[in-house]
Image 1 (tube, rainbow, N blue to C red):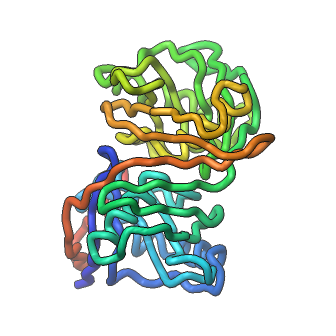
Image 2: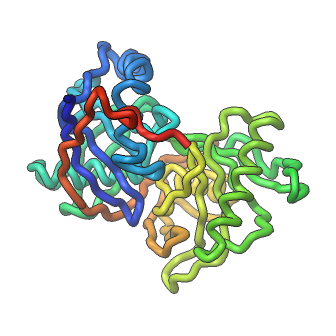
Amino acid sequence: MKAIQVIDSHTEGEPTRVVVSGAPEPAGSTIGERLQSFSRLFEDHYRALVLEPRAYEAVVGVWIGEPTEPSCLKDVIFFNPTGALGMCGHGTIGLMSTLAHIGIAPGTYRLNTPVGVVEAKLIDQNTVQVQNVPSYRIAKAVPIQVEGYGEVVGDVAWGGNTFFLVKNSPIAVQVENLDALTTFTRAVMRAVNAQGYPAVNHVEVFGPPTRPDAHSKNYILCPGGEYDRSPCGTGTSAKLACLAADGKLAPGEILIQESIIGTAYRAWYQGTGDQIIPTIEGRAYVTGESKLLFSDNDPMVGGILK
């Protein structure tokens, strides 16, 4: 029987699972080599950590290892049931809260991810600011023909993952519309991938906020078909890039982005021109420490793929 030690948390409602010990270590002298090794190990050793019956599809896993970039605290690879992710804002906040739980002090730390180095400021055990990788808009006001919905227009933008940010959702961004929003955004994902943007792996839809302190409310479809319970760090970074490109948000000006369930991030950016440097602030809370057991004779040892 194999045992893997994990620590779970949630960031503004979205779950994170940090792998502490027991899983095979990805090999390599760079984060790129480690990512390739992780991808080879994923199906047999990591995917079951974020699938039923030990988890569910919304959980994002985090592998951490000794840094191959000397200025960094850790090498970090985020993953969900579809495989490795480029970057994960809520996962970074959850990771830092988890590291605080097991002993690191408040301060500013650098993390080496597959898409570049990010900076995480641990303010207290629960509050973290993430300075993300450079973010930018790839294409503005792209019209997509979506089966069952007609023309949908959106921006394509990079915030550590590639997003299609819908401008004209036919469905109100409200929690009671979760099923309809999921069906709609899955159709949008298929359409945008088929119509010239195969790299898009998240769809983001906006609506008026519910919270009096927020500027916008969003719904995010993630790879694998689950929705983000948090306001999505890389998605908010992509939105900041689009707002900056349109001259609708000045450097340093605060955006409060509300999630579909009513939680929020504070966000702002530095820089001008084609790329900006976003910062996302949110809160995470450790929810458990577990030893996950995997028996060779368990028919669900590899998890349940839907």
